[in-house]
Image (cartoon, rainbow, N blue to C red):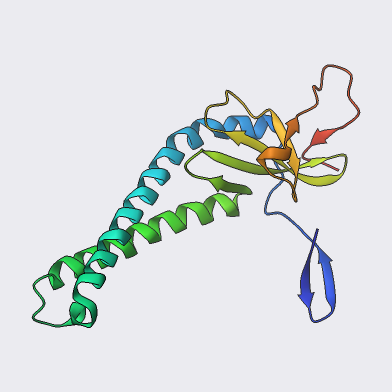
Length: 163
């Protein structure tokens, strides 16, 4: 995979970090705590959005009127939307900065950048799994994931941080 460097120039894609299976597994306790919290924030954001939209449909253009009886509620909901949305965005961006991609908050699905036979791939983990046990290409998804080759047994692939 490549990304644009400038007009007409291409440079190789460089993930923020390459994880080994062991390092990814060490991070799972933190993710098991964080992901439900992020999910709860996303659910609350959905409810706040629904309430704001309900007020907009009901009041129309009058929603912003200084004498609107629901103005205080709207201001409070707008503030909650901004604060909670900002917190969620910061947490997800921090994970991304570390080389962890949140793919599905509801399912607790995350990917870690790794190398397999010299190619950058994703280690794939879902919240109900005991450890990271699958991988897929960057262009793949949960449906295309495959078991990580067993380092103790016969294998044709080498999965590591290096390469």
